[in-house]
Length: 284
Length: 270
Image (tube, rainbow over all chains, first blue to last red; front, top):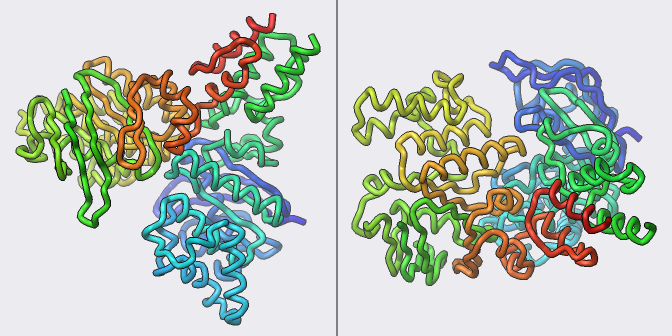
């Protein structure tokens, strides 16, 4: 089932004279884990904003083509409808949290949907549990670390039970251990709960093991998309500002120097490369 | 020369951000402060130009005790580029933004022109001289913030998380700029938890955790110490993780460029 569909999508922000998105054609299916990569300013954030109605409802500008979220055209379905399908998590969790307690923050959107009390309580409990932050329930968002705040922000989206969660560089201000934890939790939402994930991130080394589709953007267009292993094998994506993990570069050099069959696949993790080297060594 | 002597710092809300910091940084050094969020890296940087003064102990910058000097006078020697570059901006154009501090320091108009011109060129911002700083992209804003500081040529340049929000090509550029400024004799102090960036830069590393310095050593030594990195919520550079696993080939854990490590693997395999 198609979750998001974009046809001939273009966008230009009001007051600007250049198109930030150009001629984007894209289909994202249910349960996919999609990673958007590319240089700063290539249009990743703008594309994400088209997926939950922030464009055209919140950001003014010229929209061309169409975007459908579960068949709903984003031009005539406002964000409060679309947000029940696609929730969005931003770079800075401080912009998303405002209530006095974590629990109240997560319950806020549900109260606005006028859900029954019991259902709200149930969903808040569930979201806290899934994100592994039950101990933070009564805390003030202000006293949390960056990683904890980001988990609360995701929990408040999760409580809306969206089918799709969109994340725009959610780990950029986190230290590496917190970033890894957050990414592992996001991956669980995908493979345990079947939530479609669309994420823009620079930490490819942490994400690639989970991702089924890599989309590389440049200057408002999609230049490559597909299985990350295939893309890294076939194309040189470094000039597009994609931070190719260093193990991939080791493998590429090995391939170049040794005969092609030695390294049979492009490894996405250190473990994969080490396995390949062991196998090659014992088979020699 | 920068000296921290038994420095403690407690924020007005009672949070103790630094405790028993003893540190010496010589002229022309390249130093990275690493550690988890909240380890005290930014608090330490703010002591360099007197934005914060120690609750106890003292900080001496080029012979001056920061408790007895103003931020304005210390700033001649110490320029700090904060994480959120935009917070520094207020002028209508990039040119004016860079020249502002120079006017305040009382430089002659001729000198100002020369220096602003040099900074724009060095940071590749010449095309933007008449543009509003607020209309620049994230990467350009970071470069402008650095241009502002470099223009008044402080002996010490501190950079707070220079790679946050930067793409991989901008990071490479940042490495070149930092190396160049360091080669020109400037002391560079960077706070960062970007291990791959620091692995490429290979500075002296001061590892912080919970307000304390827990290790002070060179990149190779610090970044290959897995238990120490874990304590600071850092993840080892990928090449360190890889070489750790390649003990069966007789390869020792170390830093290095991927291409070099590949050649090393081939040598061992043959």
